[in-house]
Length: 467
Image (cartoon, rainbow, N blue to C red; front, side, top):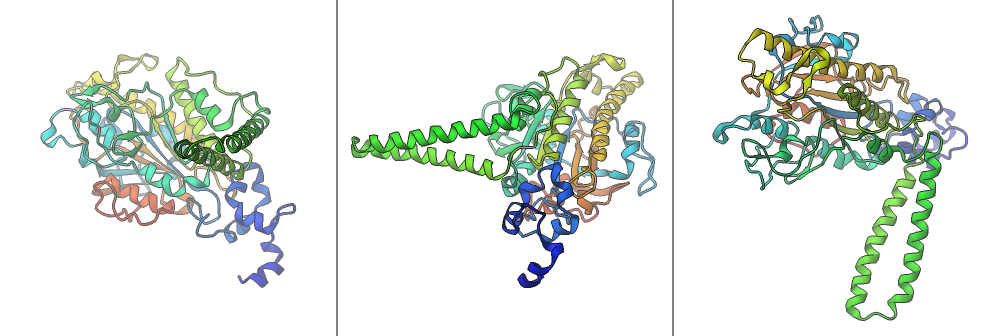
C-alpha cells in the first residue's frame, strides 16, 4: 500500500480519537491493553506492523510471548512418554492432566542437555541440570567462582524487552540462594536460578507473589493503582526538576574536580529521567482489578497457582513478553503429604527401581503437570487482542534438565512445548527429535520472537525444523 492509497482507504485508518501517527508509533503500547482489542481489527493490526514493532509479534499484530517453566528431579520415563508418535498420540498417565490442552501442546522427545553430563567433574548433576537448562554452557565447578552463560530468555529479552514495561520476568516458588556450595562443590547460584544475564550474574527470581504483583501493577487497592503510579511519576519529575535547579545554582561555586563529579551525577539523573519518560510512553498500566496476593502461601499448590496467575496477567497486560519460572530447584527434597507422599522428592527420585518409590515419584510428576495444566486452561480461556486465545499467541517450554532422576541422565529430557506461537508451531502431537540439543529448540523459538543474528546458542548444532 502506498502513502496516498493508504490515506484514502478507510480500512487503514486508526480508530476514532487516535491519530495515524500516534497509532503507528504507539502500536506496542496500544495492543498492550486487553480493553483496546475491540478498537483494533486484526487486519489493521497486521497492516501497521513495521520491522521494529514486528519483534515478538504474531502475524496478526498481537504480542507473542515465550516462557520457560522448570520442574525438578527429572521424571519417571515409563510414566511420562506417550505410547505413539504423531497426532494420534495417547497421553501417558503423568501427562493425562493435559488432556484438555492436548491439541495445544507438543510432547518433544530425545532432546539432550549435554552440558550437564559429568565428564571429568564427577558429582553435581542437580546443579548442572538446573544451571545449564537455559544456557547450554558447561559450568565452572566452584562454590565461589561462578561461570555459566547468558540464558536464552535474556538473549530474547535484550532484543525485544524494550517493547514492554519489563524486559523479562523471573519467578520462583522456592527459597533463593546465590552463595555457598549446594551440590558436590557447585555454587548454590546454579541450582536456584534459571535466568542469567551474564556468565557470572544470575537474574535472581522473586518468590513472593505480592512483591511481584506490586512491581508489575503498583501498590494500592484495585482501582487505585493507576492513580498511584501517575502520582509517583509526578513526584519523580518534581524531584528531578528540583535537583536540576539546585545543581545550576551550585555549579558556579564548584572547582573543576567537583564540577566533574556533578556532571557525572547529573548524567545519572538524566538516565533516570529517560527511564521515567520511557515508562510513560509505554502508556498507563492495565489495572487487573484484582487484589494483590497476601504473600507466600503456606500451601505449595496455592503458591504455584498464584505465580502462574501473575505470569498470565503479565502476558495479558503486555507488561512483559519473556518469563521464566523455577517451580523448585533441582535436588529439592520437598514432601507432598497432601497427595500421600510424605517422603522427600529428591530422596524418592533415587528409587533404585523399588516399585513403591517409583509410583510415588510418578505421583509427584503428575501433580506438577496438574498445576501446569490449570495454567494452560486459563491461557486458553483468555482472549488476546486479536481474538485468539492467549495460549495460541504464546510458547511455553515445560521441562527439566534431568531426565531419569534415579540415574541422573540428561538425554531424552522430559519436555512439553505448549502454545501455538501465533500459528507458527505445530501442536497436538508427540514428536521425537532424534538426539538433538535442547538449545536447537531454543534457537527455533528465538527466531519466532524476532531475534536477529543468533547463529548459535550454547551447544546448539542447528535449529529444529520440525516444531
